[in-house]
Length: 166
Image (cartoon, rainbow, N blue to C red; front, side, top):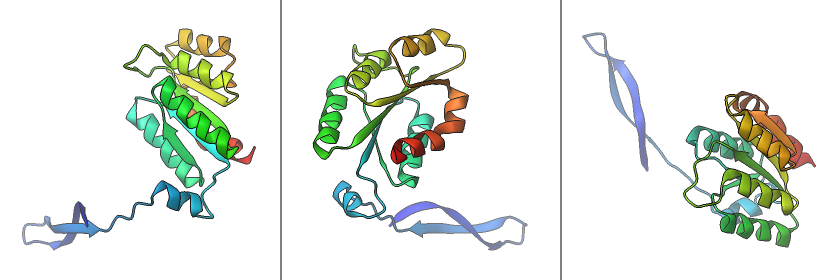
């Protein structure tokens, strides 16, 4: 049982709503449960690098809503581990990278992008419109789709759906 928020019960004499805790049960499916689920798409893997929590949550929640899986990666080793899993399962891979991500290891977002591209993954890169240098670098690496943050946010469901449908 998880305490989520408070819900109004009724209005008190002072005009303010009285509240009581809302309790909700959370069921978290394991990875194997999701794979066994008929609504879970195991033929496509979505990998992403986004240190901005807003973008990371958008990617993960949109993938889940579309019946696919999304996995965050911040190192080349973690990416290779996921690419190996995808290859073993014969999954296609879409890699999405926020070029503005600040990573702790020497690998830059562009290094991760290059590694994904060399592995045969479809790639999407995005950055702020004030960073044309990063957008140009992604184009130079052969990224399949390069766009600004705003365009990425607007097109995210379409991008994921096209990857899942491919």
